[in-house]
Image 1 (cartoon, one colour):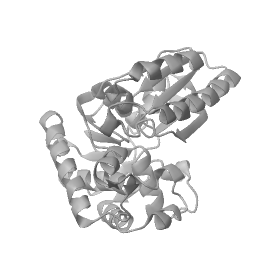
Image 2 (cartoon, helix red, strand yellow; image 1 turned 45 degrees about the horizontal axis):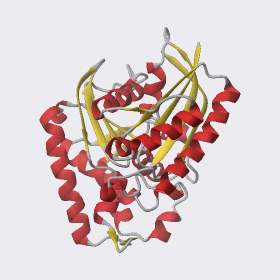
Image 3 (tube, one colour; image 1 turned 60 degrees about the vertical axis):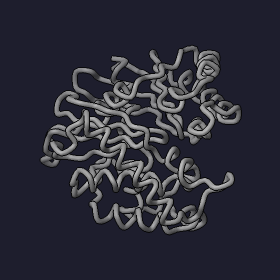
Length: 313
């Protein structure tokens, strides 16, 4: 077994996994997995820069993670940064801060690399499970972008497009610095138009219609799953490999889009950092299912973070 640490820093959250990996058996023994909402990408779509407050929130989480990695004695660390730090003019400021705290340079990966890590993390343990048909379509709905990857035992095609729960919320739901709550029909229509255009782009590279199993990753998908399961608290073991039907996703999305901030915050499984962006994230998931004809989504708690960990061995 090899003990490694992986960090995935996205637009909305930063996450840590410390695990023991067995390359021969494909087993991953999780020692610590945690997530912090830092909103690194706050305002990037509008200003093109990482805000000082967002950087400090991210660096505070990095300092916490450095302590965990040291205590558990991980022998390797890989830090991957995604959409927000790809887009920002001042990304070197972010890089310097991470190096100072963790001693490794964050890898600002391409959308295609991001998709491949997600595919590996999500599908490594799906083989032979519940008669799931291949090829898989793995969809990772992040804060700033969404990754699409089709594959069976290997990646066949991948594409990253600029739709995500934070980007769609900031682009269409902000008015005078405040989120419209609930959104108007016109705002929802504008988000749907952006999503449709992005799906057209993804379909140019990724054969969406060929997929037989849709696998959904990241916080928007897992939160929708937790709501569908009626959980009183967020339980990764119950959510992992659960199946949510198109009808359930449609109903939950409609409810989220018509609810107020207080109503969304009162949902037992809702992370405080997702209250404002979950409606847009659910709408992305629903649009993908309707476009691809998927009758259900298989939800995975294992995603790009697990793929990053596997890349170390």
